[in-house]
Image 1 (tube, one colour):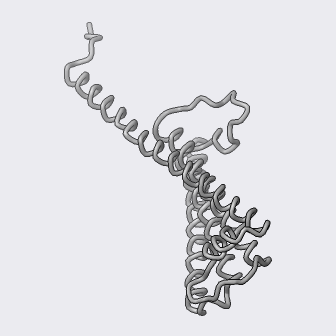
Image 2 (cartoon, one colour):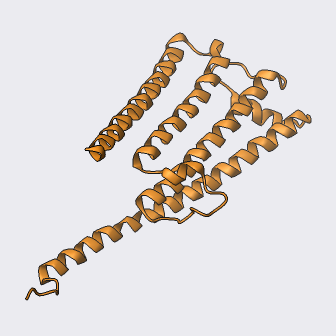
Image 3 (tube, helix red, strand yellow):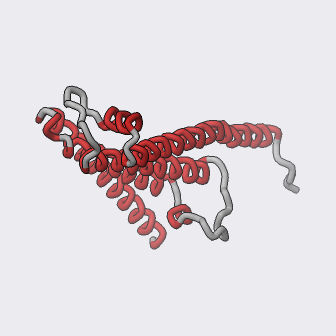
Length: 203
């Protein structure tokens, strides 16, 4: 008869494997820290929005704060709230929102992928992308979010193009193109891997 009890070495391997697997919970403080960072971004968003509204109503202190926030080094400050200044402030608010979205994807997707299941399948507010999230999907979505953030910064540079030298504009454009190419490479690599896995299943 075979002994159904696991050997001592097997039990030790099991205990070691369990300990190593439990180490994933060390990531929990990191995700909690990102939630605090999210709170800071929410506070920053409302401060900027409040200043924009007060500046539109003629508050001089808020107006000066807005001018300082959108100022370009070496460029003179505007003397009134114009369309360009409002656009730059709004783009800054959109930038905060996109970074906040990036944080949510990292917090929720990363926790679901690397720490523990959230069991949100029946939750009415479950994000569509979370139902099929894995490391590859998360990586691609993060790359797309970074491209969106880079696009906002590049647009702000183009709006203030006269305040920048050509070398700075070209450098920022090249960096944005590198982000685009990197995202395309990540998506293409993931597609190849998915096709390979699909072919292996058929065989």
